[in-house]
Length: 196
Image (cartoon, rainbow, N blue to C red; front, side):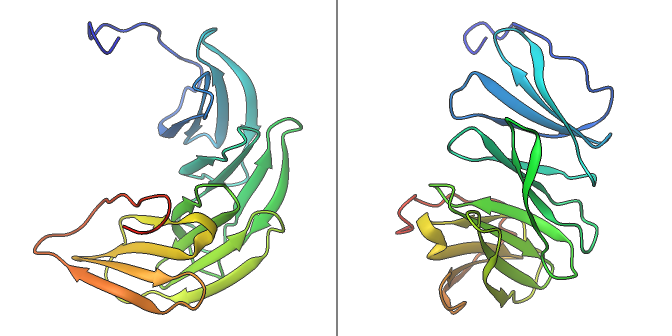
């Protein structure tokens, strides 16, 4: 409880280290990814797993699409492992999106769920989730990336690289702005319209 600080429910069934958890837009479900290559969709009220998926790789990131019916899994840190778009109703992979031959380190979903941005060690790629095809890719600069975000339609992509935040044109790959700080930038937020 946010008001009392006491535990309301305990969810157990993974028997492995949890990598991530994401809440569905309806607030009634959440999904977890664990080190045993299992994804589980939980019903919050019942405290039960309602969907289980066996992953092909040890993915560490999950993104729930706005429709609440599809998810992305990725970021296994193994070069060549694809990002997968899943349909939860039939537990099938809709698209396999391979970020060249490098490992995907970060994923971002456009606010309407129509595009995905995958960031690797040397490049950023923008994908259409309708087709599963690569729209465009452009090279990253230098420094370790800690976060990536995208605006509606992936028109703008913002990435951290070491002490800097870079804003890119998602259409051309051109760097539109660079802002460098005195310390490493590990997280940021972007307005949905991409204006700031």
